[in-house]
Image 1 (cartoon, rainbow, N blue to C red):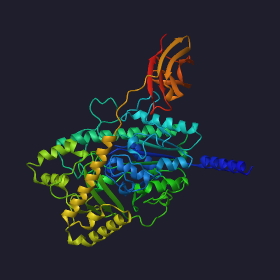
Image 2: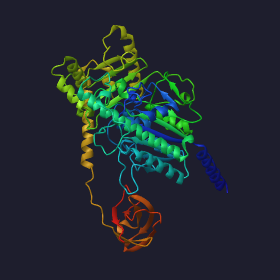
Image 3: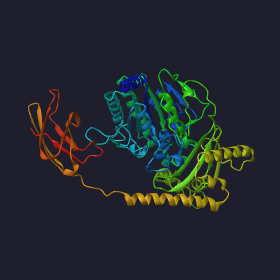
Image 4: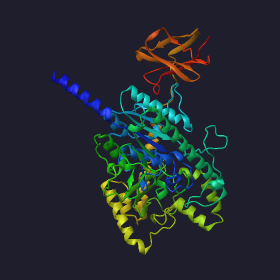
Amino acid sequence: MNRFITLLLLSFSCSLIQAGAPNLLVITVDDMSCDSAGVFDGVIPDLTPHMDQLASEGLRFEMAHVQVGNCYPSRNVMFSGQYPHSSGVEGFYQVNNDYPVFCDVMKKAGYFTAIRGKVSHSTPYQPYAWDADLTIKEDGKKEHIKDVVSYGTSLTKGIYLAKQANKPFAININISDPHKPFWFDGDPHGVSRIYTAEESPIPGFLFDDPAVRNELALYYTSVRRADDALGAILSALQKSGQEENTIVVFLSDHGMPLPFAKTQLYHHSTRTPLMIRWPGVVTPDTVDDQHMVSAIDFLPTFCEMINAPLPDNQQGSSFLPLLQGKNQANRDVVFKEYNENAGGKRNPMRGVQTPQYLYLFNPWSDGTDVMRTATQGTKTYKRMQELAATSEPIRKRLDLFEHRIVEELYDVQEDPDCLINLIDSKDHHSALVKLRDQLKTWMHDTDDHALVAFESRNDLQIRRAYVDKTQKETDERRAAKRKNKPKATKKMKLIKVSATQEDNVVTVSIQHTIPKQLEIQKVHVTLKNDGKQIERKILEVSGKGDTELTFSVPDTLTTSSLRIAAFVGADYPTNLQIVQEEVQR
C-alpha cells in the first residue's frame, strides 16, 4: 500500500510539473556573423525581418559569445556545459561521454526531446538519447537542409509527437543557412530576397574586391533564407497554440564562413546574436549591453529555467537573473578555445575577451606552419592569394591568416575587426598582464592541456613539442577510427511487398522470411498519397509466411497516386530492409 501511495504521489507530482513546465525551443543558424542580423548593428537594412521581430519580443544580448569558431565543438559546449578540452569534443568526432548533456537532462526532467539538423554535430548522436530526429521524413528520406518550409514542418511534427507523449517539449532546430553552399542562381530552394554585389557591405576584416563582393552577395542572400526559415519555425509555433508557453532561444554557432571569421577566435568569430523570448518572464524589446554571457552558460541556464537539477562538472553558470531584469556579478569575461579542423589538422588557440579587450594565444605559430581551415576553399581566400603578389597590405593579411603570431591583443571597442595588434604597446601593457593572468588561471582551473605551452610561450621548442604531441594523438585517433570502421553490409531481403486497390480499400500482401536468429521483427507499413502519409500500421512477423493487411482510402483524395512504404526493424534509423511499391489498380 505504501509503495502504491508513493507511486501515485510521484505520478501526480510529475503531471503537475509537466502541466506547468514551459516548452523550450533552441534555434541556431549556421555560420552567421552577429552583425548580419539587423538588430545587431544592421549591416544591411531589413536583411533579417524575422530575427528583428523576435528580438523586439524578447531580450537580446550585445556581448554574447560562443566558445569555439567551428560548429561541431561549438554546439557541444552548448549541450554539455563544458569546454572542449574538458568534454573531449575538440574536433569533429564523437566521444563516449560519461556525462549528461542537454537531451539527457531534459528527458530526465520529463521533457520530450527532438532535434532537426546537425544531428551528427550534437552530443550524443541520434538515436542515443533524442526522442525523435525531426530531420527524417515519414518516408524515411531526409528533409533538405536548404528547404525553408520544411523547418516549420519539422517543428509541427515535434510538437505533435510531444503532445502524443503528453510531455512538454525541448526541441533543437538547426537552420543550415548561411553555411556553405550558399544560395546560387538557379537554386531550387527559394529565398524571399536576393542581394546583389552592389548591396553587399564588406566586413572590416576583409578587403574590397569584386570577387569578395560577389561571394558576400551569396552569403547575405543565404542569411535572408535563414531568416525565412526562422519565420517558418515561428509561424508553426504560433499555429500550434504553444507560443505563450514556449521559451525561444536564438543564436548562431559562430561567424561567417570567410577568412578571419569562421575557425578563428576573433571578435566576429565568436560574437553571436543571442536573443531570448520568454512570455511573462522576459520584458519585450529589451537589451543587455552590460553583461557578458557565453555558450558555456547555456545548459545551466536551461536547467534553472525549467527547475531541473544541474548536472555535475558544469563549467558555466546560469544567467537566469539577467532574463528577469536583474544584475549579475562576474559577467565581464569570456574564455574561448580552438583545437582542430574537420580534417584533424591541429592549430590550437586560446583566448580571453572582456568588454574592451581580446587576447589570443597561438602556440602553433612558428612562422612556417600554415593553418588549415574550411575558409581556404572560398573565393575570397583565393582572391587574397592572387592579390598578395602585388599588394603589400594584403600580403601581410594573408601572412597573418596563414601563420599568425604567438600572441595578439586587440581593443575590440575601438577595433572590433581586430586589425591593430597591441601586443607590443606600452600603453596597453597592464591590460595585457591582467589578461594573461586571467587566461592562465582559467587554464589551470579547467585542467587545460595547453597550459604547458602557455607557461612556456616564449620557448618555441616547448610550444612545438606540445602541438606535435596533440597532433600525433589526433592522427592516432583518426587512424584507429578508420581501422575499426565497420564494412558496409547489404540490406537483408526479409520481405516482399505487393499492393492492390479495389474501390476504397488497399490490400497489402507481405511475404516474409525472417531467419531464426532475428526471432520476431516489426514491419512498419505506410500508405502514402503523393509522398504524404495517410496511415501507418505495424505488425510483427517471424519465420516464413504470408501476411495481409488493409487500408481504407479517404474519399477526399484528389489523386490516385498511392504507394506503400515498408521497413523491417524497431525504428527507421536501424532498419534491416526498406521496400517501396506502387499500389496496383
